[in-house]
Image (cartoon, rainbow, N blue to C red):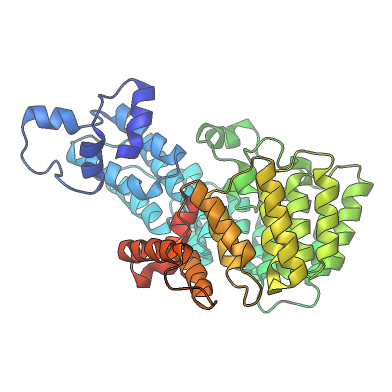
Length: 461
């Protein structure tokens, strides 16, 4: 629990615990079930009562360390501290943010065992977690469970269900939810239309009218009716620091709290343009951009980022560069936009694309933007696929990460090392030796069978 230290100090309620002892507690070493002296117990304990444990759990949720929630909960029970409803709400919100469906259902079951019935807000969080994990069957089971226990659905519940089903492209069930909303006297708001767009984007096999449907939903959303979701419905979400974008699994969820990154009146356009990039439809993208302009709205960074991504996935590097330059010449440009252009330009590893990627990264560096582990991993993976040329971009990305003491995820290091070995580089080359050392350390730490899982874990930290 060394990650909790800063929170404990800030709260001023908990006693100071040493980092070593706290780390041992999080690793399961020396659990409280073993008899220890009172002094040792006091030194290692980081919470004494339900209020302090709620503070600890809230800190873990805020720090996005959902993998530690079960440890904190186990410690709470071993201390003989009885969890309350707020405890379980914090725990389930944390699992939602971390997309940990199994843990979410575990905490729900624990809640019931203690005589606490989940309320509608908690069911909303559980359904949202199902959407994040693309498990629409579990979302349907939760709906049946709510009905069986007499839990009344709110507007938010319907929208959570709609978007959870949309994550797996279940258009028939999405329409069924829309009919249920209408029967309950609820109108469709922009988040409902966002879910409809997502459902058609994710539908497999894709239908021929998908792009026409997306444009149709964008048009229909302009007359959306406000769903019956006034202060009382959103109060708990605000208190739990859950944005509507996160609750409904919108593509803008990671940027909802970034000032100036998304312009919320463009929500439906965000989802539609994100779908265009995923489906590689440049024509639909340009139609949407014209619609935004006609409405008098400026492009925000999210619109530009995914418009650039769409152009690049369609092979139109010139349009992507033009859009990037027009935006960056007049507005502050976030690092994500540079990374999107650089990564997308490397698709196919053409000489022109690799040149654009290199120049974009140099511009980003000159403006004092730095890569985080996720960005570095994504860029190194993309650059390492270059089969011809001097491997300049991959080397440049690696050097940027090395200067910041950032180790990318194992698949990226493996791909970069493989690319170096395919070139005529002496076996005692310092760069090759350094990469081989980093690769050996990562393989010892994670093992060859955990590449994919740990790539996601490292990129998110």
